[in-house]
Length: 499
Image (cartoon, rainbow, N blue to C red; front, side, top):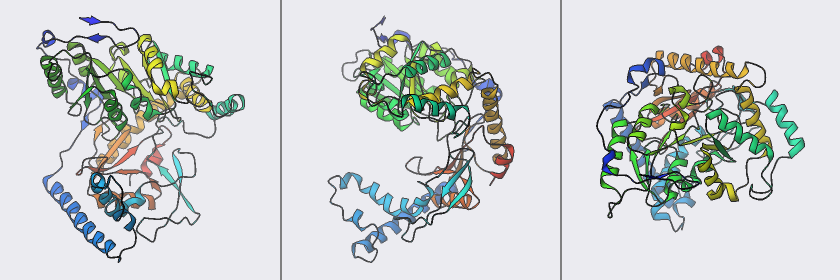
């Protein structure tokens, strides 16, 4: 029985009658069209030696801590001797930071001094105390940018988007100075919301000034205590934070594993809520379009089939997929040829493909009106700044071809071609590459902490800027470099980036 609640997701009283057998639609037969997923198991000897590496680093760390306590080593003493009341719960974090992270800190937080386009100016810095402090000699390197989320190349300081932003600043200034509930509700924000809803195929949309907050502060408006939230194990931190704030029961299923998801759904419906065994008020499945650390693409058709089979609801985070895949850049829903109406909540950000910041949630009118009334971000938060909103509007117009050119189509095609070309070439070089062949996020497995640090430093010396990621952002054994491709990369640039 479905009971409609005005302004919210319909509440479904679940019962075991929905547990049915039978095959689900499969995407396996069409992997050629939709891209092959690559995941090479870690070799046993590599796993052993990676553990050995961390063991050596741990022993070294304890020895250095002893030297800090007796005063021989000066740097890091304030962390060891801290009277932090949370010292017991954060001790491993502190140990890891001072004895492991600091050894390779120079691989992160690199300041840049230019637009994050196909090339970027990386500011040079030096350290004579093991990366605890830096000195800046005043020089910089012009590097090929393989680290920014500039998928469609809209990170620009010239051209139609930049000119439109300049005009907007002259008209609106740079800030709203109020929440939308008061005097911050600009006409251009309403225009942007209509454009986003049209673009993704939903009835309505609401936009926010921060992508992370779009997830973390709005999920509590959709599910509460008495509901079940089933989340992919590799979902982004913003989704994890948002899920914890809902008060709902949280279950985690194996990454992109349809069988495990179905088991979770079956058990949830059969067993009901803990202790009382009452039916769940709602069951919400939470997934991403493209997973930013794995480069994998969600198996959306199969998840939609499960959602319908068990009368659940679906929340899709398209932060890395909107604009980046699909024939017209409409994300994984278009990529798989699914109906947008089969996805209850469509979330995305403007940080990647649109060269801006902020995020959106698109759904039917009732859900969006409910979010506008219940969301802390919508009621209390300062909304998206006028120049940022204009950047999104301008880039959307180009993607939709409303500027009278084929530039948007060219960008989408260029990104797809660059993705296929770069992934193929890197695999031919013998690297272990994760993810889908059509994903512009390209994880290259390095495993060893020293290896991915050396990789990052060597690339910087060759004037290639990229991102390396290790524990705790990834599992301990799966340190990696993460390449992000752009429509602005040329074939010559990518050949230069073949390390």
